[in-house]
Image 1: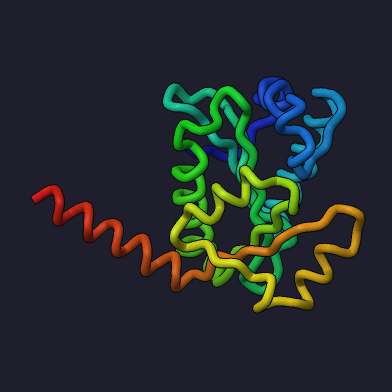
Image 2 (image 1 turned 90 degrees about the vertical axis):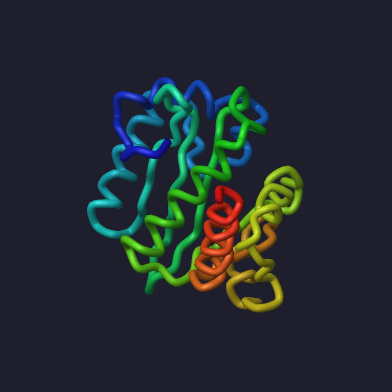
Length: 182
């Protein structure tokens, strides 16, 4: 479901991200497959320096369908960015990818907070984020950070995933699943 980024999949991913319903909401706004290849190469280099972490989301057959990344990494926190190609949206890949990626961030990389900035007009992503039991609004808790992400023309709502809340909700879900299996 998640794998390290690979330059060989850039053309397939570019085709998915260039769709008009996906493109406005991606961080890497490449205008060609070659430009996306270059941006991905830079992202892989940033990961080697500890500035970002990025994975390719794959479908059940191992085909690339989107990406999940954390950017602006600083002091055990960073900003999460996820996109999935239109044909794969609404099929549960987003939640599975986030669960796996957050486990990696919190337990392998020792993050304590993951932030999400979602454009005010992106109602679909806001609803998807709030469906996750470990996501909470951070507009009021982090007004300075909210002001910082809203300096430009685009306006965002701020959400966060604290490690302790992620642990509590996922541990409860695991326990509940084990009890139902008995």
